[in-house]
Length: 154
Image (tube, rainbow, N blue to C red):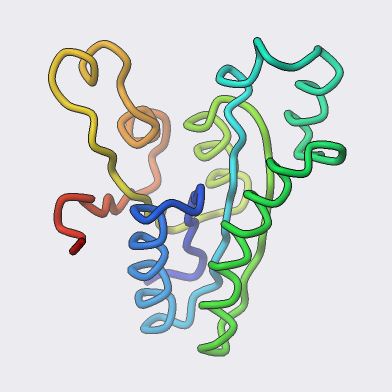
């Protein structure tokens, strides 16, 4: 049923809960796991120069040690969990609008399932801004399994 599972991750607790679900499914189906870290260029656009933003869009975090470390740690966790079970894992770092990059990556890599965490915004703010998860749901035809953060134990 699943040959390639995409896990967008930022290394947060919620994202790691989604990773655990994705790894479990990949183990059951013998699927390849793709770990994707997306640096949101709109969020960093004001604090960086044009050249740095362009490098981030290309997934080149050279010279941005904190961002590179965050990306490597987030996708490295996925790879470590997958390889511990003998599963193949692919790591990718990219920059752009997260939901667009996720949908594009899923399409280009013939992904069967996207597994990602929800977040805690609610009410008017959530309705006005949306979330990466909600926007991803609207941007792709690939099935998306959303792991609800409220169900994660403290």
